[in-house]
Length: 352
Image (cartoon, rainbow, N blue to C red; front, side, top):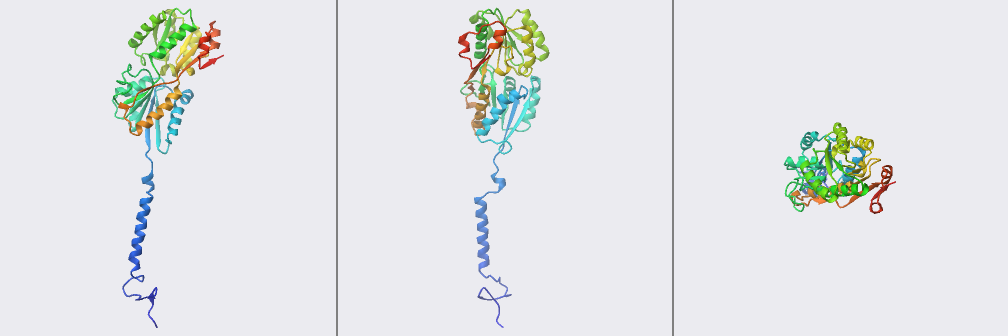
């Protein structure tokens, strides 16, 4: 009987060599090369995962529906348009002081323990705190006043530190609001400015108000309130000062507890000018402020630039480009006032 051979080759089975003879080593080498090539061409799932950026967000207000609509959603939308997807390449961590500035240091500490790639500071209080901490993590400050006057930066074009951002204007808006009060209430004899000394530095404000007094020819008196518990006393002081008009400065505490301020303005029948249309009460005369949603969308673009390597020190601190004037014609009529046509035609919105 003939001896079995392998694939027609003259090689006996059991001769001590593999049945496929010289092919076996070559095939194994070819398979190994195929595997290596596949790994090079298609990296493992672990290698191909995108970088997940962690952004910390510190706000002085409460995350109510209005804040979400004007700030958080525009910010998220701006990031989405730039390719950031929460849960994939983005993680957002929020902390809110809810109108209590004394909570800001503890909330900032919580966020920094998460090792964020960037900190967004919303409002003057969080921005000042971030500056004072001399953080290594880059900071983008949004909706702050004049950042040079606040001591946040050295220069708009070259901030010079680890913080940049977008200003919603400072004394320029205050001057415009005072002028609005004079135009809406020509008979006004004294204007009160309700301010929170935890947010606004009184000596600096008094210097500005003295300059505006000379321009308007009307005495202007600052009235302080730090907490909601001090609101009643503040309005009693406004009455004692015989002020017949009040400007309510934009502030995290005032914003969070704006409903109580609305009640007091109504109770005292005071013509009032406010910092944002959503803070404007039913009987408030007008609001004049930056377009907050636009600022937060632009803020997302600034965050993107810094995450991609731009340095805050040489990233220009921007200013808001759009301001909104809202006139409450219904409130004016209720107070027996006639709104000049010159204001109605330039208003972005008129409440009738």
